[in-house]
Length: 303
Image (tube, rainbow, N blue to C red; front, side, top):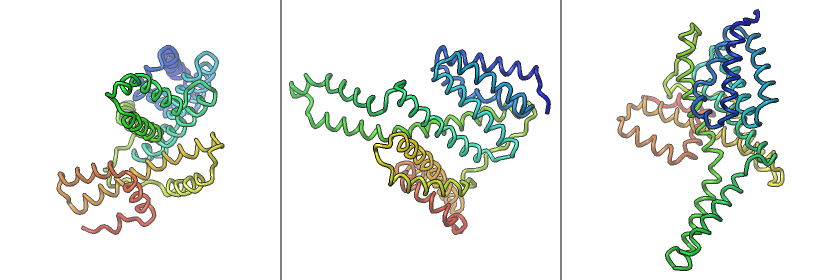
């Protein structure tokens, strides 16, 4: 397939302008993210050599002239554009796209955060929460002396912050899942308007994770038992990968619940209550997701 110089030039210019915006105001990525894959995926589907040329030019320029944060964001856009384009050529289902892209982007994001923290370009969550605790204690010190706030209240606040700190990677994965979902909802119909074949989402009760996710879940869980706290980088990668895989098992658990509600024809009101309980009892939902992948529990549910 030959290089389409016109399309390559236009898409390269679009992504370079996007790079400049991200470099100047990184917060603008919140608005650009749901639309950011459209140019790259379009070019990939029209001409793969053109995509590679464009990606090389944008990567080189952003690496030399932009900040490390802007470079990492632009690189993520290029990688995700390639992944989505490849999945489209393989005729993958939308839910497969959602799972694969969420997993890859989550690992890329979490590892990038670890890199920035090791390079002292970003504070660790421990440092950030520690500063927040100290600020809070400074503000309420006089109130404690006056008896308006008890030390037990401060201890309770610190405990709550510790719990939030533990949940940070999980919250990142959850938000990236929502971002990928929104991106697919926006991107695929637009690509379809350019005569690019795109799939439709199947109902949640039809969703099934690949067995590889289950194997990785067990492998990572076992490795996490033997990683010492001193191995900061390895521990961070393993734990963050575990968060991603736990989220995938959680989605599989929701799929099983959705299938159960469909087959048993549970009234909508009770179905909503069960879904609320599934979110409140996430570890239990994850367990059912694991059991579904092991024993194919959907096949055992009869009307």
